[in-house]
Length: 222
Length: 146
Image (tube, rainbow over all chains, first blue to last red):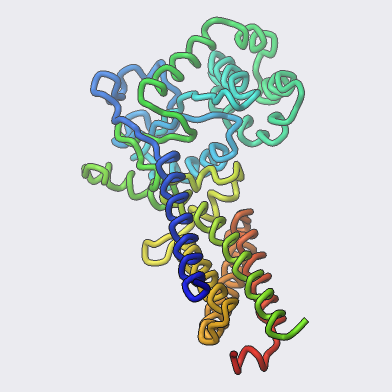
């Protein structure tokens, strides 16, 4: 029996590693739907209700569902900025809120961004929120920090406070979240390029660039 | 304690460390295959490390190669612990190659990417531990076998 024992142990460990890896893969692999035609973002239609960065008429639209308290979203924001420089007028980025319940201040951060947006400074607040993510994420009262950020970027702070509690900001965050849920999204950041989901395995700099290049060339994504 | 018993214990420890390395590398492989390189461990630096071009060799995630390497170490160490002398001769070059690869990846993280992935550092620590354990094995015994 001892003669076969090392073989049994090795095969056992191989099966355990493969099995646990396969289970983890299945658990993590997202099943995303393409954005249906009626919900697609085409041209400039409806741009007044979207937060767009880059050329509004760009041929490629990258729609990002993000959470301001998610560290990878913060990393992605820096990468997105780089992409906009690389692709210049050929790319536009649309941001959608998907604050995860697990993140204590994420929804409030989304409301802060929307309140800033009502004064025409959504992207400025977006930048500050990601840049200062480590600070406010751990703060007991993140709202005080959001208000100080509002002052820093030159907003009317009293109006900002009112807007954070107002129905307009909430409605906007909820609408984005509903869109995310309807598309089967459960992680952040989740990306769509011209309405097609970026495969989770391609959610890296090379994969995102390849997907944008494919969209520019008019090819369907792999 | 006899030299033979010491070696058996040592190779058993090597096998256990290799299983821990296999678990870490399997997790990283799944992250790479599912695209969760953006979110590994909630660390933003993971995106820069695992999402970089250095994280793949010929389109294959480095983590997957690492998992295979750890599995080889586990297999050789298990057989060595059971007295298979030839297994030890495979163990030395395998861990040696892993050690060199680890040095390269630490260099890339420190000086090229300026970002560290905690799971990669854990893997590096385990490879260094494996190398240390191998060095601790009595040299003459390693060469002559049983």
